[in-house]
Image (cartoon, rainbow, N blue to C red):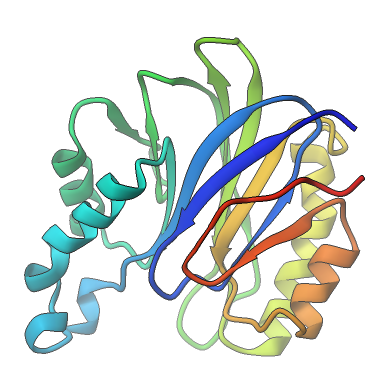
Amino acid sequence: MTNNRFSFYMGTLIVASLLAVSSCIANTVMSFNIRTEHANDPGELAWEKRKNNVVDVIVKANPSVIGLQEASTNQQQYLEEALGPNWLPVANAPILFRSDMYRLLAKGAIELVEDKWEKRFAYWVKLEAKNTNTSWLFITTHWGVDEASQLGSAEILLNALPAVTKNWQLPVVLVGDFNAEPNSEPYLKMVNGSPLQNNFWGLHSQVLNPKQ
């Protein structure tokens, strides 16, 4: 096994992350469900009241790549502007990355199972580190709220990711709001059916080593 270290910060409402790696890369990534402004939350929960705090959390975590959940176009544009010129958005994907650190080589979206609220997707980018010319994959997703859609989404990802990851030869970090408990059938299906390893559950963690 090669020595691989990834660290990341998980934002509010994030359920879990999965990790599989196969070459030596060090990255800091973030997954953040920022709560959509379209919910029209009252008082201090309103987007206008908390948006500066969201930026502060990101700046403090100091990630190099961010996967967002529930971000409206307006919210994502605000974060792009607030974080500064070194941050680039990925077109048609809720992903931001440090352009001074990475080149975008490819991107795509995997349509998952729709739930009662909306269509669900997994968005991926292939990035190349400018200092090492080493490439890796970052994937962010937001699963549906019911177990049936989660199971279907897990099955779709298990079938799709070998092609995206070149049969798991590329380092890959998969993060997101899975809306599932760590011992749930959909989550275990995803972990047990792939080289992915559950490295974190909660709000903040340092990712450990991948499966041997």
